[in-house]
Length: 111
Image (cartoon, rainbow, N blue to C red; front, side, top):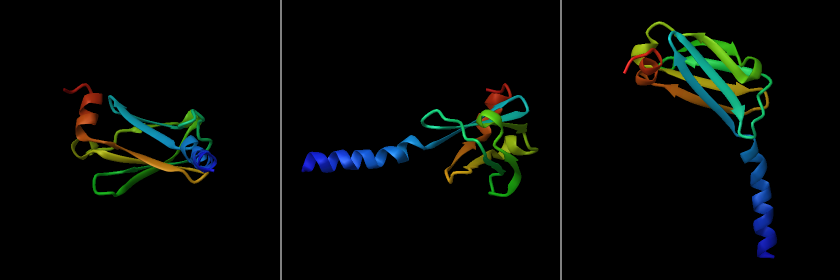
């Protein structure tokens, strides 16, 4: 009985783990690239990427893009304050990535 219950709990947890949304953002020069995939490797087919400044002010909203990839120019002042990148996909999953000033400097060729 305990084995059956344990197995049932593991199976119940698998769908949630299989659909975790992964978000990664990086900077190369003056371009920010956001990549989104599910933990299963599947690419989201639709959704929004929101770019916020360090004070949570919305700077722009973009489509998630083909292959889960979105690119945009680095907003003015972001190198000093950083950015918050939020991704919401059509099936209700969401996640975020924080680009710190150090991350941005490194992507622009700084130390």
